[in-house]
Length: 121
Image 1 (cartoon, rainbow, N blue to C red):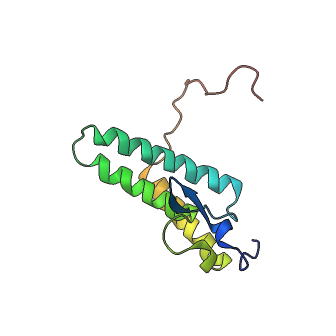
Image 2: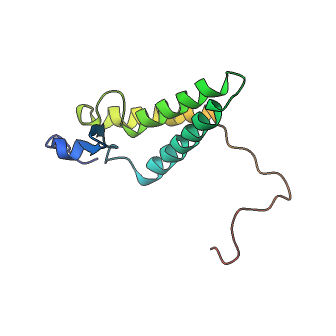
């Protein structure tokens, strides 16, 4: 992991609509970032859907998904620039473990079509 001890505020935060937001940890491996972003999108979608009415269990689960994904990305919790490389790895690994437990992958059904399109490698 790169040494980010000299990281400036410009590299740690961005402004959107006049509000300062923490940037994603730049040392995340691409595959980890992609998995966390997928969980984040699923959680945000769940929050929107749940807000329209549910049995009361879906909204807290969706909010927990968003929180865990944001923590894993380094956007919430202890700032990523204050963590050692080992702490940062532990942060995103723990978030992914809990997210994967909340949202287990569905096993493929025998005879089901794959999502690849013709011509995909």
